[in-house]
Length: 370
Image (tube, rainbow, N blue to C red):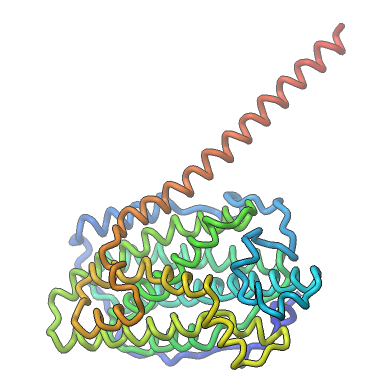
C-alpha cells in the first residue's frame, strides 16, 4: 500500500524540493583531526545497529491505545468535547494523536538525514565529514523505523507540520555551512529528543518504548557532535555574526513552541482551527510539554556560545531561561543507559526462555526413555 493512501490529508506536493545553496567543500588533509571528534566518529561506527533485528516487531500494538499514556495528556480531556465522545471515538483520538506525533518524528528524521548529508558536503573539516556520514546512516535508520511503525502498527500518517517544514526549509536554504548544524542538531533534534523522552518515560507499551529508547541513544551522539563543532566555530565569529545566529534560534524556538501542538488532529475531529488553537494554548499538559521541549535546546545553545542579552530575554519570556543550567551531559548519558538496560533486560528474558526450553526438552527426553 502506498504511503499516500494512509495520509489523513494529502501532502501539498508529493516531492518537496528545496534549492541547494552554498558550496561543496573538499579537504585534502587526511591525517589531521580533533581527537574528541574522531573518537565520536569511532563510536558512531561501533554503535550502528539494524532496526529489523534489534527491535521486536512481533510486539502487538492496539491502534485505539498505541502508547498507553494517560488520557490527561490529550488536549480534549476534561472538555465538553471529551464528555460527548464514545469510547470508540476516544480510541480514534488516541490513534490520531499517536499518528500525528510519530509522523512528525518521521518527517523530522528525513529532514535530519538530508541535513546530515548536507553537512558532509559543506563542512570544511574532514573529521566532521566522517562523523556526519555515520549520522546520515543513523537518520536513515530512524526514518525507516518510524515509517514501519506507522505503516504496520498504526495504519495512518499525517503530513509534515507547516512550521516544522518551514524551519527545515530555512535550515537547508541557508548557504552558511554551520546552519544545518544549528537548525537541525540544536533546534529540531533538541526539540525531538525532549518529545521522544516524554513519551519514552510515560508509555506503558514495549514496542514504542524500544523504538524511542534506541533512537535516543543515537541522538545523544548527534547532539554531542553539534556541540563540539559549533562551540569551536562560534569562538571565531564576530559579535554581529553571533547575533545573526541568535536571531535564527529565537525565531525557531518561538515557532516550535507555539505551533507544534497537534491542532491538525483536533480539526480532523470537527473542531474549528481557532477553537483548536485556544484548547491547545490552555491545555495544562501542553503548557508543561512546551516548557520541557526546551530541556535539551537551552543548555546546548548556552554551551555553544549563543547567549546574548536578546536571546536570554526571549528565554525569560518563554519561561525556560533556568534550563540553561541543566546538565546536558547527564541527560545524554541517561539516554544511553536506558537503551542499554532495555537490551540487557531483553537478552536476559531470551536467555531464561532458552534455558527453560532446554530443561523441558531434557525432561521430555527422560520421560520418553523411561
